[in-house]
Image (tube, rainbow, N blue to C red):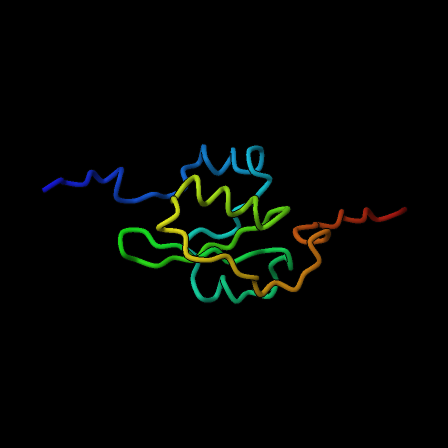
Length: 111
């Protein structure tokens, strides 16, 4: 019987991988292993997708956005392989992606 090392057991996104996701795949990982509140949050961008996958017998959901669904599929397929990736579905976000995360500049008082 083969023992599974802790590294093999948990396949989480490392900080290095999260930094390279945008450059390599053109995607942005909003929430990793999201909770119900994060998944159903309507203040996320409307182009966000829900990615369902299974690791170590436990189902997880990530909230991710990308240019195309195929880019998101490629990213998760490279990480979790075919058997662990379940489905990619539309998210609950309602905010226009152009203005999501926009912080207006502070107005200075005029004399």
